[in-house]
Image 1: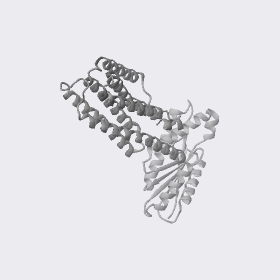
Image 2: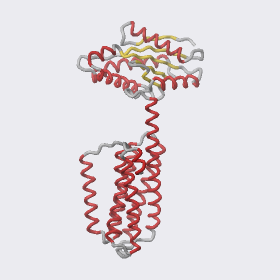
Image 3: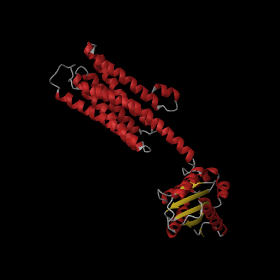
Length: 364
């Protein structure tokens, strides 16, 4: 982990995870030294504090990895728990059962928090999210079992003697910790790969498909679509966009494009393909859409952009779009020809006043 941190210092999570692994090894070694008559302040107090710190650093690394903003209230709550745990350990570390219950409870809470963070923020890799959740929750369950065992044996042993069955829990703890140490770099690597792919396929301003990805995806659909399936294609242009930039500045222009893109995403289906193919020009492909359905969608987009522009345009500003729409069914035209027809319809909409829809009929 620390080597990965040296290689990628911008990913501070690896420093937390490296420290987590280090303190776990030190804590485990000190805990094992209880059989060697090592002073109890080292073999119990320091060992348990280190074993509790390990999952705490895991949580800190996950917070850094997911860029989670922690509120002041949450910080105070966590600090209060840490101080309470430290004070209780200082009071009761000579009773190893009590120290074990405290430490196992803190570790269980940390792994439950880790499972929650992965569930809430790791959204792009469902299989890895599920696997890491199971590992963290299994870890938490092991700690709960340890608490139950310690409580059940509370009156049966010497203060520094622990039940033999805890040996198997320790082995499971080591196995799950090792598995976690392997999964964390894998999670980072896969998300980095996903980010690279997204940057290659997405327009950075609008988060829609960029021109290359839109055309490659549309061509792939066109080659594989059923010949009898209707399809609609729209070309959309933001009206008088140069005037928006000249009058309000490029910052407002960029915001306008991003908000228009959000309107498209809100009103389109997950199966639809939308991309930014030019400065203020967008294209939409609607698979399996009948002409009357496509026309309703286009009119909804016109109305929504017109209405929502009041929310983000400066006072007195107004933003509209023009749309050229083509409906197509049949095998005889390639995608580029259909897109050219939609582009001609778009010019017709702009020539006849803008802020409107123009239809172009295409025969199969």
